[in-house]
Length: 156
Image (tube, rainbow, N blue to C red; front, side, top):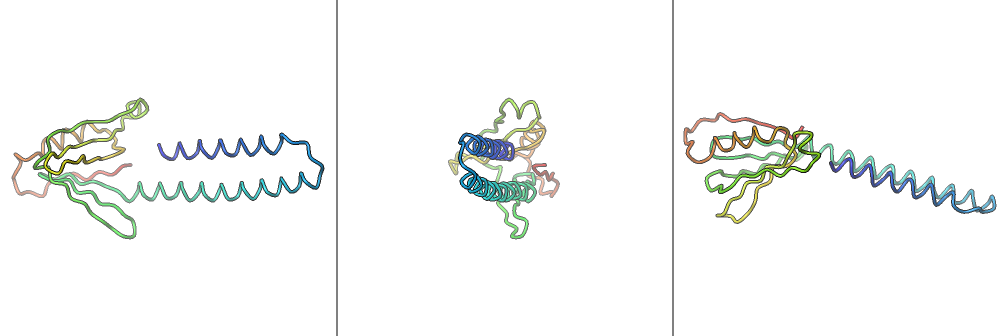
């Protein structure tokens, strides 16, 4: 979703530059300066767009969640690997946030609430979120089997 918004933003900027460039009837020396400036701005915007897109893609590829009995482990980072562990012991509610486009594409954000910590835990951009909500409900505190069985899923 962020990539689509980024593309729309840059498309609007490109359109505004094109309209600005063609809205003035200037003599040739000034017209060439405006054209040079427009090309420079265009190149800078393209570089920002490439950087933003690659940054979002690498963030997205470097994240995954592992659901185990009693906990959810969030691992992220491509070069510097980091990990956050969330216990399911005190989870009070599980909800699903989906917009219209997310419903159509069967994606959503799972939201868990821990009243002890007074915080929400968000698992964003999950494909087939109902499946994972059922799995999380299955692994809530009553499952103290001590097994290492779980499921790993990423945001792809």
